[in-house]
Amino acid sequence: MTIRKLTAMLAAALLLIAGLTPALAQTPVLHLGDGAPIPFVVGWRSRLMAAPAALPGITGQVSLTWKQENYKSNDPQPNIAIELQNIALTDDALALFFRAEYPEYLPLAYGTAQLSYDWALPHISLGLQGKDYLPIVSLWSEGRPDGERAVLGMRVYTLEEPIPDGAVLLLGPDELPLRIDRGGAHDPTRAVVPNQPVTLEYQRYQGRDTGQEFTVKRVSFGPFGNRLLIVNLDKGRDTAFTAFRLRDDAGQPLPVISQGSTYSTLASPANPVPMHNELWFFGGENAAAIDLIPIQTLQQNEPDFHRDELPLDGAFPATITLKDGSHVTVNSVQVDESGFHVSYITDTESAAASFYPGDAQGESLSDKLFYVSSNSFDQRERTFLMDGLWMAEHKGQPVARVTAEDMKAMRTLLISSFSQFYEKPMPDLAVRVVLK
Image (cartoon, rainbow, N blue to C red; front, top):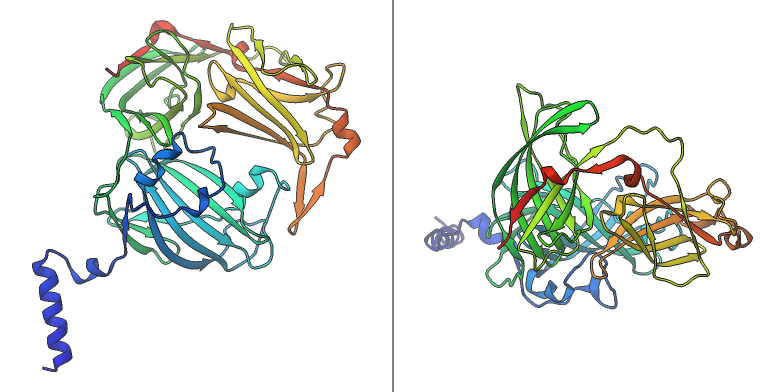
């Protein structure tokens, strides 16, 4: 036996005595709460972080690089250089912070609008060792420019269940391993795990009975916002996750940022499938309980929605009262070369309001101003965001689809709401989830 082989055997034996296999000892480690700098947040205000001051306690530095193909069919650039820099983790969400550099140009679908940088972020493969996939519920993205061909990005994956200490993430096309060390983490998340079973029987749609079975698994208030996680039993047709509005025990509405509606195409009454869905919402931190109020969707009979008119030369914030008594408050409206941008809040949820450009007479300009709508939110400001984007892109160069004269014609903002006509809250069926 050579000295080299003997040394290797002794090293392996020492690792086994220490409780580590040689493969595990060679796996890079993510030390959460290490205090390392996070390039993405330097000089940048993220809209996806509800509590940015908590970020150092839940984040660790990473040093992994690779090149990958671009999975977007409309942009065939190969060999995108990825540098994974940091990872944040709570029991509700995992966030990747990385830099992506394109070989030719940065694809900006809508000029310099924020959505362009969000969409410029390439897909990153993410898995969990020992599982077929990483069990996630939703994905949020935020990007910022870093030179002419690169973008800094944050991808937030919301989780079906917490990732345990010591688990190994698999990253990139080559599934690079990274072991999680949560020993130094400081996560300020406050959570309640009621595991509350619920059965609802009602007409979700007029004339159609719906049976819904679900479990309120978790309610949490953390660095990425406020979340209500639900596991519903999908039985196929008509049992997709029920739409809800939220309010606290004092009767105050809790605006819903986003609500999942995932379902299984394999589900049937004979083969029910448990599905994870979630509601992210503003407020409720001091509530003793939260009520989930089911919504009945009414039949659509009106050919057009009523649109309220809001002059752009008036004072902001400005509040519009809808037919159902709910409110939309527009904080600001900005019109620039990339489109028009609305910051607003509603009593119910972001999807409750729609916005359109109007002329001085309150007539719609939607047929004259070609734009694409995009909706998002700002966790720190607790506002919803809507962008009407009229800037396009061709091989890295912005292409204007609206002239300066066209933009000047936009003098009003037209506001409508599907919910005020066709969604009926059913408070008699409210489900109360006790938090305290």
